[in-house]
Image 1 (cartoon, rainbow, N blue to C red):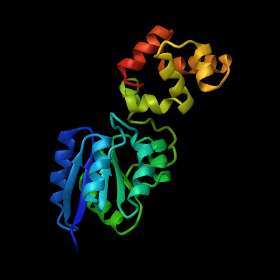
Image 2: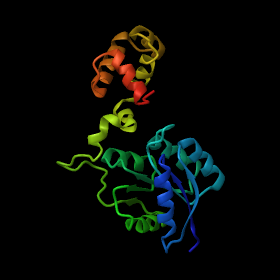
Image 3: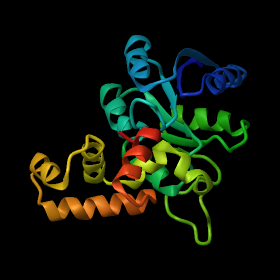
Length: 220
C-alpha cells in the first residue's frame, strides 16, 4: 500500500510533534507526515502546497474557527480525507463536524491504539467515530469541557449566535445601542435584547465588564 501523506494542524506544537511520532510508528498502513501547522492560515497554505491524502486537525485555532473551516477545506480539497482530532467531545461539535464534511472524529482522550483503525477506515472511504463519542446527547452525561467552560475562547464563542458576536464586537468599540442598530440595520430594542443575552451567557453584569471580558478572552 502506498504511504499515506498526512498533514497535522493544532495550536500546540508539542502535541503535533508527539502525534507525528505516533503516526509514523504505525506499521500498516504506512503514514508519512508531510506537513504541520499551528494556526489556520498556515494550515490552508500548507494544504495547497503539499496536497496530502489525510488531514488531522483541531477545531480551536487562534485565527479561525475549525468547524467552519471544514466546509472550505473539503470544497478546496475534495479528494483529501479529513479527521477532526480534538479535545472537544460534546455531541454538538461532533455532529456539526460531520455535517460540514468531516470524514472522522477522534478524541484526544482516546487511546492511541485506535488510531490505526481510524486511519484505515477513513482511507477506505468510510466514516470513523472514535469510541465514546456521539452525535446525539447521552442522558445524565456531563461534557468533559463544562468545567473549564468560562476559560475557553472557542467554547465561549460557540455559545454566542452569529448576530450576538456581531453586536459584541460593536459593543467593544464603545458604540451605543442606537449606533449598533444603525450599523446592523436592526432596531434599538433588538440590540438591547442581544446585549442582555450576551451578558447572561458570559455571566457579566455591566458593559464595562463585558468589554473587558471580551478582550481578555479574545472574543473579538
